[in-house]
Length: 187
Image 1 (cartoon, helix red, strand yellow):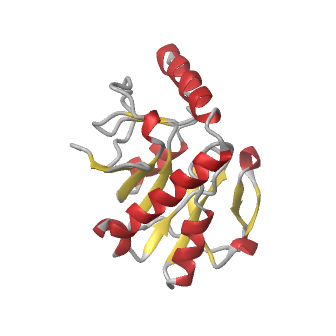
Image 2 (cartoon, helix red, strand yellow):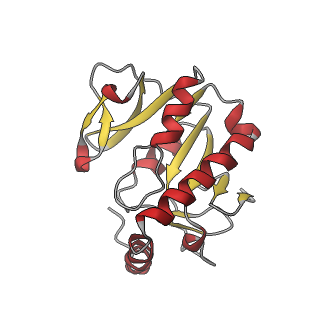
């Protein structure tokens, strides 16, 4: 867990802001993000795609997952095992069960593949240079430090802020996609 007090304060403020977004606005924003993803070369040409299953006020990814599966793409969701995270292939939503932190994760019999073309990353906050603020557990940073792939941060426009303090272990995002724009970072 990240113990940086500045980051923790920022995380709490940004989560409160995001949590105050209505379900309807979140649904509309998630649909707009899905439309933008369809136009991204890095995303639409990917075959093995890592996606998260949303919790709380995160961008809804269920429709993205369903669309990818119907297109015949290989879809992988993260599974936390101890202090690490791995990606496992799902064939539909019945491949999921409640896992760590009460998040929907692939079942144990789903095959592992950490060699992905692109990963959609949940985001609490981010700055224009691609420094991402997550929940502070470091699962994505640890995974991405060991597994190089294209990263796309999905977030609401209001979660982009001027500057997030960067720690040595933070992995920068390649892209930021919001309901209003697609930003390629200066990574």
